[in-house]
Amino acid sequence: MKKYRNFFFVMVSVLFMLLAACDSSDVSKATSDNQSSSSDSTQNMNGESSNEDMTNKGENESKTENTSEAAEDIQQNDQENPSNNSKKEAYLKNLNDMEEADKHAEAKTTMADMEEQEKQRYEKWDEALNEIYGVLKEQLSKEQMDQLREEQRQWIKYRDEAAEEASLEYKGGSMESLEYVAAQASLTKERAYKLVAHYME
Image (cartoon, rainbow, N blue to C red; front, side, top):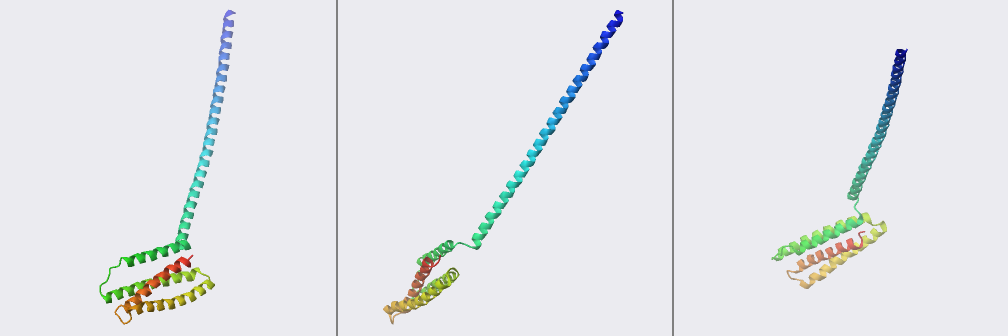
């Protein structure tokens, strides 16, 4: 009887051990499932974050490209359509450079060379004046241009009369023709400056 009782206790002990083992396995499995679920959740969150980062990166790159294209468009537009102030400044600088070139031109010694030099100076300034006049045709209104055209006619008459008067000081001498063309060159230079300063916008 004692033998059977010991056997019973052994069996009960084994049964409790099996039950405990089963509970431990379930707990371990549940823990494993939780860890797997947590890992999936973390992976999902990381995946969403990664996708969001990629989206933001794509948007930022797109904005950068658009900004760059806009800057290029503005630069191209500035080159194709320079502002009136920029054009005015450019012409004033060009006139200043021309005047400086006149000041540093090599001095001629013979009367013929001096007269030829003044003729070239006059032609240079007359060409610049005509170019400025052409720009003003594009900038000014029809009424303003009509008025300027009449002023220009009057100025040409004044230029020739003033040059003639200056040359009379040397009437009959070798300096007469030189003084005439030199006066024309100087008056044309002054007119070019005036048109840019007072009419070019």
